[in-house]
Length: 272
Image 1 (cartoon, rainbow, N blue to C red):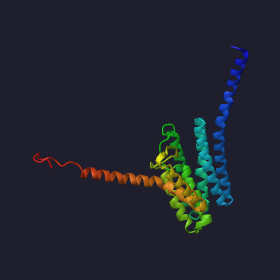
Image 2: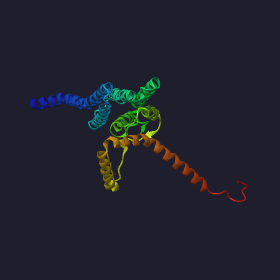
Image 3: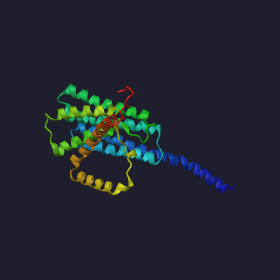
Image 4: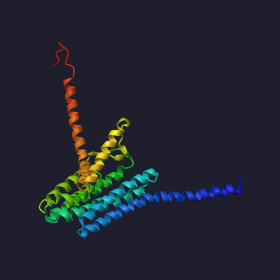
C-alpha cells in the first residue's frame, strides 16, 4: 500500500470519533435547552409572571421532542442521554409546573396545596423512573401512563388560557387546580395506554383526509391559540381513558354477541 493511502486511512479514523462526538452532542444540547427552559419557568413563577412561566414549559416540550427525534435519526441514543433527559424532564415537567400550579392556584389551602403539588411532582418522578426501566423493551409501543410532558402541557396551557380567555376567579382556581393535579397524577402512574407519535400509521388512501384534518386543526389553533392549545393537551390526556372505555364496551358487546350466537345443545342428550 502507498504511504498516501495509509495517511488517508489514519485521517479517516481520526475523524470518526470527532464525528461521533458531534452526533452525541446535538441531542444533549437540545436536552440542555429543555432544562434551561424549565429553570426559566421556575424563575418566571417566582416573579409572578405566569404566562411567561407557562410559555417556557411549552418551549421545554419542543426541546424534549427535538432531542428524542434527533437522537433516533442520528442513531445516537445512549444510556447517558436517557438519564440526562429524564433529569431535565423532572425539572421542566415536574418541578416547574408543580411550583407554577401551587403559586397560581393552591396557596390558599396552603398545606393541602403543598400536598397536591408534591403528589404531582412525585408521580411525575415515578412515571419517568418506570419509563427508564422499560425504555429498551417498549420501543415504538404505546406509553404506559400519561407521559409527563403531556401532564405539564395541560397545566401550562390552562394557565395561559386563564390569563387570556377564561379569567378564573380566586375561588375557582384552587378547586380546578386540586382536581386537575390529582387527575394528572393518577394518569401518570396508571396503566392506561397512550398512543405514541412513533406508532401512528396513516393509510395511503386517506392521506387527503388527513391533510384536511390537519389544516382545520391548524386553523383552529391559529385562530384561538390560547384556548385551543389547552383543548389539544387536555384531549390527549383524556384520550387514554376514552380509548380504554371504548375497548371495555366493545369487549362487552363482543362477549354478549358470542353468548347469544352460541349453538344450542342437541335434543335428547339430557343437557340443558
